Image (cartoon, rainbow, N blue to C red; front, side):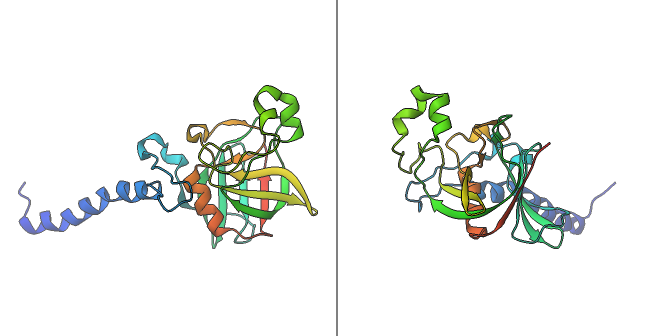
Length: 204
């Protein structure tokens, strides 16, 4: 069968457009030299496709602007409304170290100071006692580039949605109860959410 020159030219733009999707997605995880602590790109091939940030169809009764953390699925959804949400892969707390139910965003911070809780110090004093006075924000800080603090009834729950300097932990259940995201993703979420916004954490 002979393919006409016109047919080949018609098909060509579709092929080229398809090839552009990977570079565009890599750009979401590219270098961030403008940050106070510049971030290097995360090679896209090291992130499972299902853990990469993307807009998806999402049926929910929650209002636009709500964060829904699906702990068993290791996913976080930012509800956009009209059946759509921005989906992110996350790391979650180990069994027994997880928040459940609803909360709200009490405050937000860029490159936050990390201070271990009293329970964390008691569980692992050798690792955490040295940071009792707080560890300033930076590349080696466990809270990463941004932190979103969850409150209930005016009180800090001590649970956070935050970045991480261990991107390989995304998709795992290994934190001390907090929800961790790749730094590039938590920056994106941070810019979308507002203090006072609703957060729902689903457990199995």
